[in-house]
Amino acid sequence: MTELFSSPFDRHSTATEVIEDVDLSGKRVVITGATSGIGVETARALAAAGAEVTLAVRRPDAGERIAAELRTHTGNDAIHVARVDVADLESVRAFTAAWAGPLHVLINNAGIMMLPELQRGMRGHEQQFATNYLGHFALALGLHRALADAGGARMVTVSSSGHLFSPVVFDDLDYRFRPYDALSAYGQSKTAEVLLAVEADRRWSQDGIRANALHPGAIATNLQRHTGGLKTPEPYRKTIAQGAATSVFLAASPLVDDIGGRYFEDVNEAPQVTARPTELGVPAVAPYALDAANAERLWETSATVLH
Image 1 (cartoon, rainbow, N blue to C red):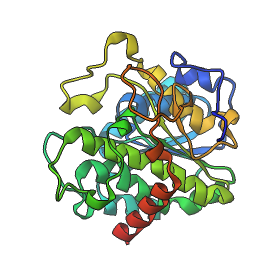
Image 2 (cartoon, rainbow, N blue to C red; image 1 turned 90 degrees about the vertical axis):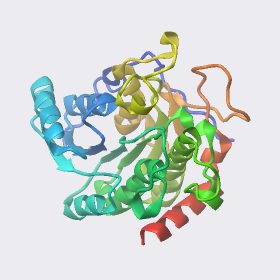
Image 3 (cartoon, rainbow, N blue to C red; image 1 turned 30 degrees about the horizontal axis):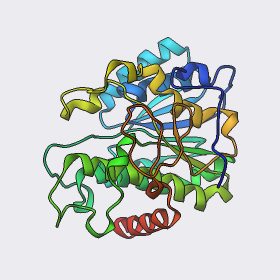
Image 4 (cartoon, one colour; image 1 turned 45 degrees about the vertical axis):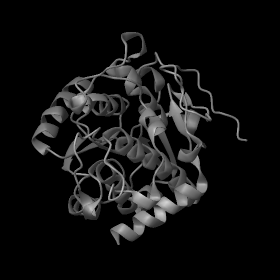
């Protein structure tokens, strides 16, 4: 059993604190879903450290407003906006085809949560699975060469403790047999995102690409629009700056240069558990989300879907 990675940071640490004194000059970053919530704060922290940041967003007009604010706030003019709708395969492919040069960091941050009714998206797949996972899988595949060309790239995928509510149900990914349930569909999509990190790291670490997944914590953002707002009690909530800390740490800290295929929470690797914790705020990852066979099967299934 590999020893759990431990950092000097915790759930109270902020995005700025976890990369204090890190110089990202010359590094190129792509982050999806960077028009609200922790996506904006993640972009801000990385831009403030000197990175060239591309906001890969569904609404470029909103992205341009955020980019203008970030340029002013950080003094970094190298903040760009590109249209990427991870729910739309053609949008993803257009972006990856147009990308030129190396890419040092890909942050799969965009997502949707607990759609109240069954919706189908990319290639007929359930919408949360399609948006949260399949779109980012396609994005990663399309940018693989750019990541490899960077010579030491990282891929960071924002999952959730919601993965504890469902494994990937390979025999019925899209609720064609079982009744649709918003929470299990969300959980399945978030498990898939962890498995993406596991398999990408296995396949691509030889190219110098390390991949990890994370749970950012309970943060009040637009993500909860279908849940009536954040229900987590105040003591277990994080600020947006704290919520972005784990993403930023995995994207840029030299402490994780050689770490991959793992799941982080509160800026530390989360332990595997045998059952979903009943206590709020306890870092935990389900074994099925880190299972190598599950990760390979999902990758192969997804590649067939997108072929």
